[in-house]
Length: 464
Image 1 (cartoon, one colour):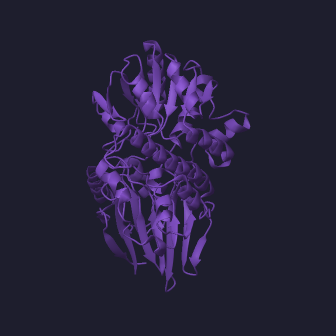
Image 2 (cartoon, one colour; image 1 turned 90 degrees about the horizontal axis):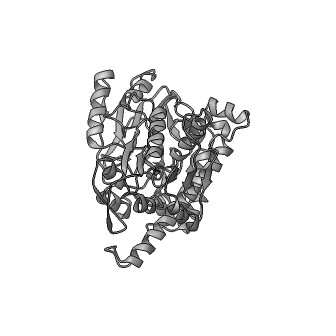
Image 3 (cartoon, rainbow, N blue to C red; image 1 turned 120 degrees about the vertical axis):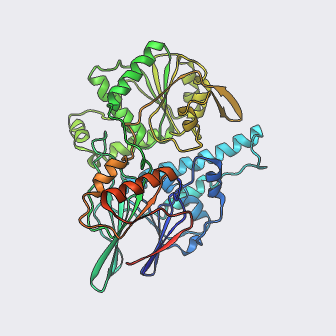
């Protein structure tokens, strides 16, 4: 028997941390930070329920902070095993983890300077040196490679279509000549999205750990591309600036790809596009170095000599001074900045400068977790607190869900239809409670499979 324990993303969307004890190995699948509401963020400071030094390996489905961002803290507290993921995930983690550490150091410094933290002094969860130490433990693999932990235990990574390098992680155990497999979905991508391959179909799954971020929602039928065209044209007509909070890695590159295509098709006017995130700029380079991992359209465009994620007036702003200079722009421009849920980073300074002007537009293009500024803006709050001050929300707020990197519940069900046998159990994680309940009911109604919604800290024995 093996045992799986859920130490994150149980009843919430963030903080993915799943411990699998199998054949004498102690494996942590994903090592994410909790984000969103304060009660969730505080969990990052709790003592990890498993002694970090007792964990043999960490397996990462992808590089986003809610799946990988706790790793430097784990290393700081004693983890010294191997970290396995795909090569693009390793390169993106090198960017994301350093940036996460830097932002935490900066937020602590700013809080201490302004005195708005309840903690004296405010401290970061980890620092850049911790992120560097974590990166030394990485041993990346390619999709389809068999990573043997012993003669009877192997790990395989499959393309999940959610982010460059994102993976379904299959762990197979052989007992008495019989193979059994548990699959961790990570985040499941969508078919036909810009840049990325479609999610790979997997088979022979005995146990499934399944995300449910959009477990009770369907993406709209409207074309997100046409919606983006409308928002850009209307923003220009209002004489303001379009501000897009976007995840630095994945979402920003997809939007740049679409903007470049729309320019070439003459559907939108060429205008300055400011990417105000050093992390996003570095990620652009990673994407450009891994064209072969992208979809067919991206490869064909690259073969034609196009810079596929560089609109004609792309402005990459790395330094603080370059970032501040954007404040002088009053109209006919697009600003893309992180973080995507407006919980930190340079986007906060742009919101401070742009929120109160009705000529400007704030475009929400991704999932916004409960408790985040992005969620509060999306839900129509008229005042938003940033850096200890309240700001009026007078700007036009728009939302386009079609750029989401998460499959909705119908798309997940369609992917599950490809399984060639029913899993013994489906564990639903990485979702809000109402989304998980709805998803569980849909799975029951569609397949009559056993579904479990684990709570934080729950453990289950599985026959592997």
